[in-house]
Length: 453
Image 1 (spheres, rainbow, N blue to C red):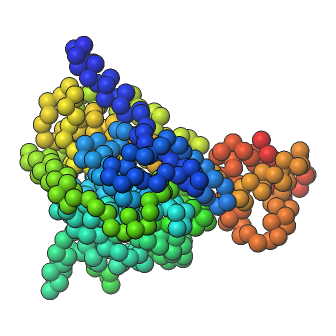
Image 2: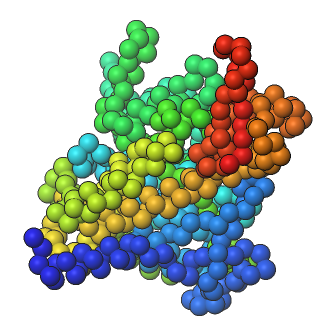
Image 3: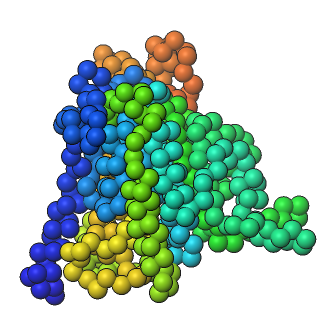
């Protein structure tokens, strides 16, 4: 049983994990604050409005716990000079450094490998800006600059990480981070018949291994470390995400971050950020030293006692039965916590022995906070769209429900069956629609009806 001092320290860490990062929620437009010269002290408290398929929603708040130590300092250094959301800087950098320094690291069966979708409106989303800051910082920390492009085929991804074969020496480095600025095209390609993109992403996420099963295809991958960061807009994301994606595993393995610019910065100021390179280098050195120390006593890690107890306490709330994309919530939290343990020293108030190979309570709370942000982003992006609003409005006018044929006609026959079914599915999960069969006395021919709740 922990002593009273230990209990106090544990409660302090958990309390901080639940607090939002203040000074980060700014409304775009007339209420947005222009960063003042120097320290950005003119920032004011407001909310970020993100546009998704014609309907605005309030973006989640990235909690304090998701930006511990050097991550908070990195965000603060950039605050006066960029409009990018903190999540668009911190989360891509975590993915990149998890791949760079996490080779061979395990917590149970979980590796520090994550896939991330950064989703924000065109022009004002500042997705690319945040990803560029993240890539430059990860490179300063010793990581390789990410490869820009699309995983057009699974064979291409596997080949980039291949084992030696005959006269082929294989890949020099089994670590690869792909920064995909056209993620919508990747999602569309994954749905084509015979596409191998999805099997490649799933296998590399789970195990990092690939065993060829045909005579001609002899490319084998062992212990590959593959990270993915995709950028797209809400409209394209919701258009190309199918119901099958939510159940088959792609979205279950994907962290989703909704972002928007959080302040207005004069273009000339954003073009020439006057950040002292020594400050950025000092942060990078902290992360580099931590990554070396973290693996100094082995790469098979475990949760500290306090972290294990807290993980048991929150495990039940990580999965929402109505949202299949949350099925892997617990593995995501563990993977994120592992990356935080790789890049951030334990919290000084951690009531545990601060030894390498130990994922402490502060690391777990950081992983939980990041996952909560991504889970809330996914819920917003997958349940808000014009088509769903139109379906709800049409169904509300008919107390006994409306069938799919009438829905198609009301939409001018300009939507596909997949788009209509996905919208109905999102409405059902959100509690806005009820789907049922209307008995008409003709076995096997009962029409599917939709009713507003």
